[in-house]
Length: 268
Image (tube, rainbow, N blue to C red):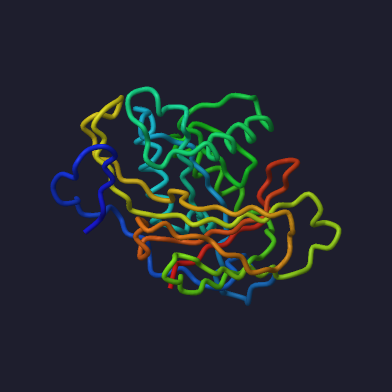
């Protein structure tokens, strides 16, 4: 059964059955397209980072949440391995419903992105590989943007995730397929813990009475400016359902916002 999130109220009833589950466990090896593919073989999908800025207090957001859920569940979309993230912003929290997953970090990230585009901040907003922004519920636009991003040649990343200890410390080894040297200047390596298939009963605000299902919720983050292979430690919050958790890592140009490579792996 899936967990329900209730903030300030007692939990009610049993959780509904999950939507489309994630496919079998994500590979622990780099997920980028090889430079050469044997004749007749199908190229490996190119990892594409899809970020959704959303809020449980926003009545326009549930359709975008469902779209992201579907992209994450499908995984392979138009030649891309979709790596989906849901950033819950906090500027809706005073409008009837305090989103339990909202953070100032998510809001700051969205505003940082907006500085590379038209300066607008809104929900739901979807970003594809840090290079294109649009309304998060526009499924056709999402498909087109993902297909376009899948034609790129990303920096290959590999992830190895160890079992977390009793305190929730989670060692993550990030491997770059090649040294970036001077080209790594201005790049940030971001490592996150995300949780899928989370159910929330909303009791107030614009989504009052709805039960929301959300995937890709960002629960823990690390950001470093060394674009090199390394081992980092994430913290797994106690309330996270570990069987529904993923680790995501990506390289991002801090000047342009462009994502140059990404990978994901399930917790062991």
